[in-house]
Image 1 (cartoon, rainbow, N blue to C red):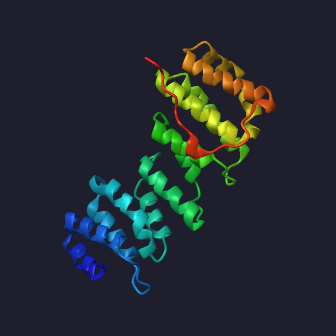
Image 2: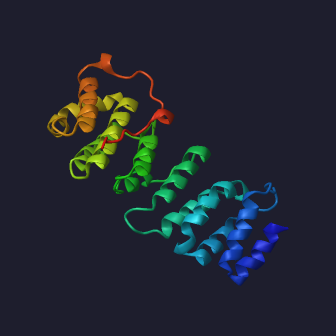
Image 3: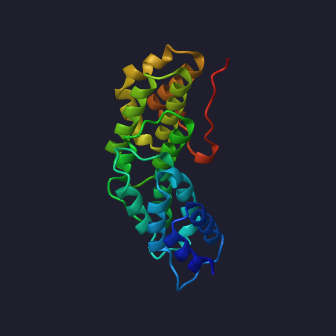
Length: 230
């Protein structure tokens, strides 16, 4: 059985063999009398950082073979002591939180230490803040303030991406519209920018000033970042 051969492979410490065996397990049916929690922990330390992304990507399909998915989360958090984590780790932890109803103290605060400057990370942030009852209004205000400030410090396309993310966050959390009006000076700087950026800034301002102008239904799946025309 591939599960039992993993024990031998882990003992031998062959990284390629470990990954290959984990891939086989990921595609196999779970067994009630066999979990791989301990073997995953040992595999993690053998594979090390060079194989971390591949290891984490396999974890989505390996969760059903585990006794307690929290074991691997603790592993990832304890052994990544920097202020921020790679985006693929944040995504996996959030997946476990939502699908297994787990709570991990400090996850959102740690996430917000990241620098959101590309579409993938911004889209993930928008996903996290969409209909999330775990987050307070004050926390989300801090997120929007950080993004708004960052949007003024970066390139035009990144600034546009950030501003569009802010628009989506506001639409997902209408309570934040009043806050954006408090930061009117930063928003109005964008009104003097190129048309693509100014257009999004006008939408934000228009929706913040009048409830009737707001979008009633917000769908994360329909979120598509605009591009600056050459």
